[in-house]
Image (cartoon, rainbow, N blue to C red):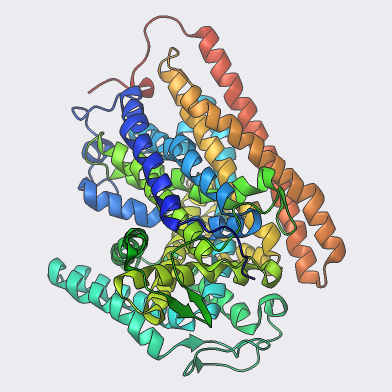
Length: 616
């Protein structure tokens, strides 16, 4: 449904975000760098413990590309689109523009800086360093449960995009195959890196053209829907699969395929797929996000020509979406807390603390690099979120009667319309943005399974018994995550699953901020705690309310109205997870608060530097 509303030029949305982000980076990030006393004369963990495998110093530009590819998944696209359709573009863009530089970027920077001062260890380790093993394990369990939600929601989103854009499915299959071959090119055949980059990056972009010529679907289209002419349909039937009733057989078929892919990718050696895929995806990321931002600027200079897509003509890059639709969404609930937890990663993401303290801190070449990679990387994700809202606003579709699919198709469509400013036909631009979207999602999905493996192994500890050996086996560990994720996603109740993911993810961010605050007060009790404490309190309040709403109101109501056993089981599991996460978070908050207060009461004399470590 397109809405007739007073149009606002998309350029003002984009410029407003860019201006606020620039102010945040130039001013606030510089203050934070001084606040945590970044010093290039101090050796980073990458240099202290260089081992050629995990601790490896990387150039700032290279590490920024890897870090950005890892954190910029599908969530900063899905969340802003879902929230924009539910509440209007104005609340969505304001929360991104204001919240990202003072909450999300601070969170990422502090997680990276804290890990930097603790030998490149995880936020769980940092928590355990000051509050004990119990607090560490509770945080790891919380993060592990959040990872399962990440796998579930991203598998569904990829399936929906594949169904809406079969050309993106073909391009994605080719993209994964190219990454596998590129890994062999680099690590097995030891062929030139530069030549490989040219060949395989060109191949990734060529896969978009191949996808347009040969779209791919697993099962026939549902109902009156139709695939593009020439679509290759591999199987018939599929109506008995979980999710087929909600999303159709094709989506229902793609979900387990994607989860199986994530399982396989997570147990393969990193050189096989993860490293070459991340490198190739960075070119898609920069071309897609940078291209959309530049296209808005170019199109606003009068170089945009009217374009017709699916029978609708777009005469300018202006909003077709209401600025504000009301305080309560029929599908999501009240704007507080569900605007915040729905946008999720576009503003603040706990998943980033796992990346920052899991891999990035081990590769940081100099301490000052933390500013551009930690703080600046999150601003880059905010720009991606802003382009998602802009794409939705251009298309102006808010019909949530079709559920998730009704919103997600707008990002590739709106992005493709933007790219026509460069003279790129929409029939090529739309599948290209679809591939950009899916590449983010696939990267996040299998990275999540791999991070879940690491966390579960840390929870179990050094395997001594046969049970511990089984649980730490990478195949068993990854399999447990994937099975649980499929159970959660099988209900098809997107309206509860995505807010549950967003709540858990943002509550994890609050816990990462808690770990940073505990580090600061134990480092020097004269440090101000407002920069981490204020976002910490806000995110605790938002996410606890959201989780309790899901567990005590939405899930019971959904179970009463459930039309299938699978739906009822999934909603029941979501309610249990919500309550468990709430309990873990409150217990950790209590432990953290007691540590902060007792430290401030008991500490006396000179401050300890570097979180308890001596200067080099």
